[in-house]
Length: 473
Image 1 (cartoon, rainbow, N blue to C red):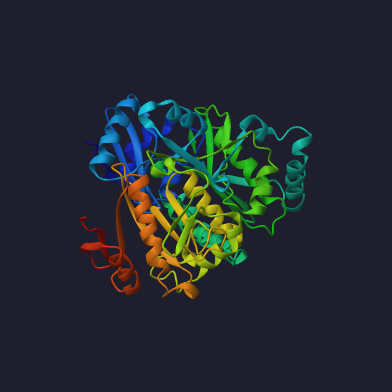
Image 2: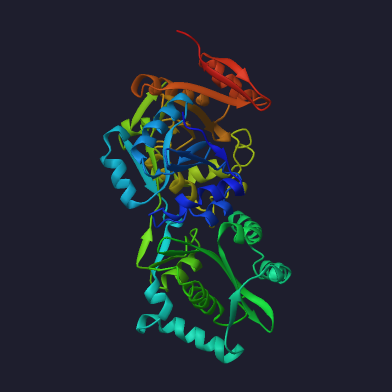
């Protein structure tokens, strides 16, 4: 049985030989990326028979990297046994196009469902183009760099040392002041950037700064994997004209001066859906976008038709439709109503832009495409408006799933939640061969009543939840 080691700097250092051999253009298995985003993801490492993979939490469940090393097929067999033994799903994260093709052609890994979110696709650039900025299409970058030189003189760009640590901390304070309106993800990224600076040397990362009048005005952190330079951090004070292209160009030249590197690509990671950042990264003319697929093997969602509808008592359950966007927005942003659902959209790090009617609709379409959930719109008639949602999720490789239901406040207290929960439970058991369980917060009396009214019995509890499964027939 596979054994996983919890994240630590020592564990990450042991993984470095595999990380350096990773053929993917995606940044997600690089040392800097794993360190930057390990908090809250329960990242763990596993080495077996000279083969390696990473486990991390996405949503409430684990997902795994595709194995790297001498025996990926053997490790896939071991992983299949591991997830089944531990009642887990078999999911793969950061799957690139080539690996997706391998999975789709691997009969034991079927049925497979997959999806990617454009916000997290990495921008891949030609090193040869970036090192020279030759040609008409890079005239803008050259003009910005020349403007910088005219205003501030020749760029003073050099690798950072331990003596620069206090001045970089002061720089980050100034950067924070310059960017006061940060979302949750940006705030987390800024916090982790400071931590990453402390471990650059131990992980073999490069950190360099651009200094104006002796003080840092920009800095970057990156690492080399194979023939690719990944740039994890790019920070600059925008009051200095032309500073971003100047720092970018200078950083590439510094790293490329190391004779052991034969660089072909530069990965500047994703844009997190920020329109300004997307425009900026596109202006540097990427040669490819590294899409990152989440792949779910054996999801019961593969059995669902694109459109579905069935009645049960007073309600009708259908697919969630584009016409439901506004109601779905209301359902997801009602903080009080979602308090016992365990969700507060204001704390959702995955929301990286303004919240509008597409935010949650796009999210649920992604989850369903990836096989991570089956979501039902609850209605009072086939073409009636959405009054709530029933959801099957937290699927396991041995055919278990969790069922939940939430109803808009104006429709509560009328038995619609009970009917919707019962409808979804019956459909899951009869048509999808799913073994259902449910849970609710200990203090959530309405959900408790809804669940037990559908002949579920409590089987256990902890300090937070009560757990239920159907009573024997």
